[in-house]
Image (cartoon, rainbow, N blue to C red; front, side, top):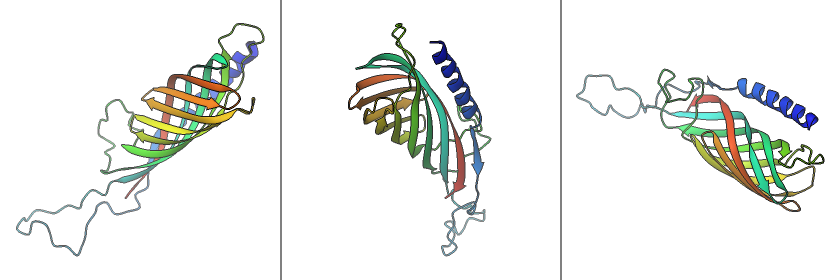
Length: 210
C-alpha cells in the first residue's frame, strides 16, 4: 500500500496546484457599454433627465479545474476514489456583474453565470480498495466524458465512461450541489457502481458583453 499512498499524494499535490492556478475572471469589453437604438425617440420626451442605455448583459466562457474525492461501491466492491476533472462551459448573465458587490460567500475573483452548458473530461485517477488483503492494491479507475447543465451552484450531467485497465465501458450520470456530488455508472463487463463525496472546483472565466 505504500506505493499507492505515494501515488495518491502526487495526484493530490498536482490537483491542488491546478486548482490554485484558477479562480479569477478576465474582461473582454468588445461591445458598447449599453444597448441603444438611435432610430427610436426617447421614451420620455418631456423628461429633461438623461436616458441611459439598457444593460447588455454578459456572455461567459469558463474553464473549470477541480478534484473530487469520496467513496464508490458496487459490483466489484468498495473503494476510496480520487478524481480530477476539467470542464469547459458557456453561459449568459442578463445583467452586467459588479466587481464591487458582495456575492454571498463567493470570492470576488470567481464569476459564475446563473445558467450554463458544458463538457467535462474526468478521470478517476486513483482508487484505494476498502479490502485490507495484500493483493487489494490501489488501482486507476475509468476515464469519462460528460455533457453538463448547471444552475450556479447545482448541476446535472450524463455521458460515457471507459476503464482502460479492465476494458469496461458504459453510461454514467452525475449530479452536484455546491461541494457535494453523487455519481452512478454501469460498465459492461465490470457492473454497476454508485458513490459520492466532496468536490473542489474553481472556474477561470472570460467575460464579454453581449
